[in-house]
Image (cartoon, rainbow, N blue to C red):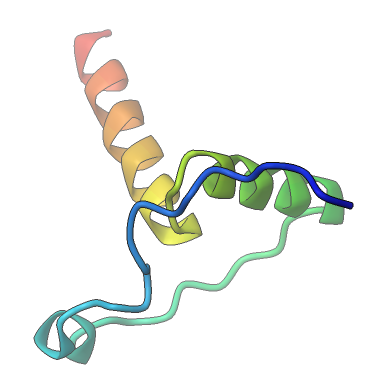
Length: 67
């Protein structure tokens, strides 16, 4: 299959070592369908799944603060 995929903006694994030194694992279960959709959307936007999660969390906090 020869589709065009958007180029990745950056390599999500290319973080500065000092940033990753304090990183911790977060672990929760989602359905396979949700994971596929989440990962697909992240890739389509040139984001890592972690960056998409962080962005969504920030947007949610802002939205709830306005209520």
